[in-house]
Image 1 (cartoon, one colour):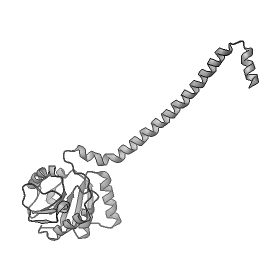
Image 2 (image 1 turned 180 degrees about the vertical axis):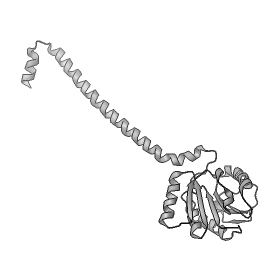
Image 3 (image 1 turned 90 degrees about the vertical axis):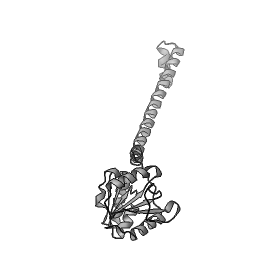
Length: 214
């Protein structure tokens, strides 16, 4: 250290100017370290944001569409009420479709009772989860697809289950009037169809099920 200081003094330079240069060099080194740290933090934050967006997009994207079916899992009582409605069904077949099938519990329960059941859902993650659950439980007559409920061929089904929201029920009612074949039944959960008269009602409160015969 002494030899280094001695060399700087022997060069004939002003000691004050030398001290300013050394101070400036130290500050530049600190700035470079801070810049590297800032870039690292920015990269980590950006990567986390991208991952979070990828995970959340399947849940958010349905809300950007014309009709919104929010994912609210059916309660055990709701599932039981739907199964009771199916047991009393006078529909001309045992093919069922669940609109906005979520995690698939209605479709799976119906499949276990012998219905050829299909669930349509916009959320890709929930569709994959439902397929995995069906595979794990070896329920081969329960299937799922990512599909818009307004593009479904309803002539293939005798039983239509819908967990809707109040704002969309009038539009669904019009869709059913155009699309359903005779001897079908609609099972509406949480909210009834505004103008159709149900053949019977099962349950109460948020677990209420309205059954309509076409």
